Length: 206
Length: 396
Ligand code: FES
Image (cartoon, rainbow over all chains, first blue to last red; front, side, top):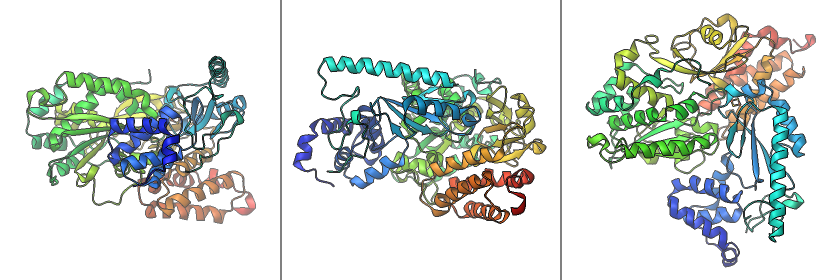
C-alpha cells in the first residue's frame, strides 16, 4: 500500500474527497477499480498521477497497477480532455463511406491532429475503432453519444456551434471571476495543464 | 430502421421462456438447449448447452457461479447486439435469467462495451422494471430461485470481447487474455464457474425455451441450427440487421442488402475472411464460413489492399501487446501492406509476409492475434493477380 505524503493530501483535498465518495459507492475491492476510474475521468476530465496514487492507496494495490489499467483502455487516459470529446470511427465501413473527408474537415476546423486537445481546451479529437454504427456510416461519438451519417459540412457546423457555446460559457464564467480560463470542471492540481497555453503534457508525479 | 427483415426474436412472448424454464429442473433446461443444437452466436461456435452443462457440473466450493453476457460487441462491422439491446433488452435479460437457473447461479453480469454507454440508462431502467415485476431478484416468479443482473461498463478495448480478457477486465485488470485451460466454465470470474455468452445467444436461449428445442433445431443445417442475425454494411444499398437461417448463401445475404455488384465480402469482420464473389454460393454456417454476424460488402471499384490496410491498422491499435507474434507481427504486416500499395514490395517480401501471417496464426496467444492476418492472407490467396498488380513488373 502506498502512503500519501501530507502535502499531497493537503493540496488535493478536493480530489481525495471525490475519490473517497466513489470508493464508498463502488467498494474497495479490486473489481471496483474500473468503475471508479471511469467515473473519475467523467467528473474531472483526467486521471492524474495523484489520482492514481490515491485510488491505489484506497484499494490497497500499487500505483503501477492502477496506471497499467488506465493506459490499457481507450476511454481511460492520464491526459486531460477538452470540454467536448469527438471520437471519429476510422474502421472499415466508415472508411468506405467517406470517413477520410470528415477527418480532414475536423482537423482543419479544430487546428489539431487526432490524439490532441485544442489550446482553448474546448475539444479533444480521437480515433475510435468500429462503434457499431456501420449501417449508418460514417459515424462518430460526440461526448460518447453516437452520431450517425455525418457529412463534412455537418462536422464543420457542429464544431462551430459547440465552440460558440463554450465561448459564451467562458465569458459568463469570466464575469463571475472564475480562476481558470477554461470552461470545464476542476483540474487536478498535480501537473494540470494550463489549457489556455495549449500545454497538454503528462502530469508530473508527486 | 436498421432492422431489414422481420425478427423472430421480436415475436417471442415475454416471460414465456422463463416460465417454461422454471417449470423444468435445471438439468432439463440444459438438456433443452443441448437438443436445440445452438452454438454460440458470438462466432466461435461452441455449443451453448454443453457450456452450460460444464458450468453446472463444475465444483463451486461456496456455491457461487456467474452468468456473463458479453455485450462487448467490438468486431468491426457488427452491430446486431446493439440493436438487440436497444429493441429487445427484456429478452436478453430473460435469457440470462434462464442461464442462471440452468447452471445454479444467482449472479448475472452484463459487460456492456464502453462505446455503448448511451444504452446504459435504458438498460438499467429495464432491469429495474424486471425487479419490480418479480422477474429478477429474490424468488423469481415465486420459484424459490434468486437471480439478479448488474451491468458493468467496458472502457474501450476490442480484446475484451475474448472471454478470459473480459473476465480480467471485470476483475479490475488490464484486459489481457488468460492461458486456457482452465476454461471460465471451471474457473472464471473470481475463480468461480462462469458462463460467458454473446447477447444474441441469450436472446435465442429464451426463444428456445419458449418455442421448444425442436422448433430451433429444424431451422438451419444439421450442424448449424437456428436463425442468425447478420450485420450487413459496406457497399450495399440497404445496410442493416438481417435475419437468415444458418446455412444461407453469402449471395442471398448480399443480394438482399442490394450489393449485387459486389466483388467480395468480408465475412466475420476484421477477424473474418475475405470471400470473393465467385465463392458467394458458400454458406454462412459453423461448418463453412463462420461469423459472429458481420458481412462487409466490397464494391467492384475498391482496392482490396485498402481494406486490408484499414483492418491491419485496427489490429495494431487493438493488440494488447502481451505476446510478440501479435504485437510485432501486426506492425510488420501493416508496414508490408503500405509498402505493397506504394509499389515498393518485391515478390519475395510478399512471400515473407504470408509466412509471417501463418506464424501469427499458430503462435499468437489468443484469438485476436491468431485471426489478425486472416483477411490479408485470404486477399492474397484469392486475388493473386490484383495483389501482384501492386508489384512493379521487374520485382514480380
Ligand atoms: S466501421 Fe465505423 S461504426 Fe463500424
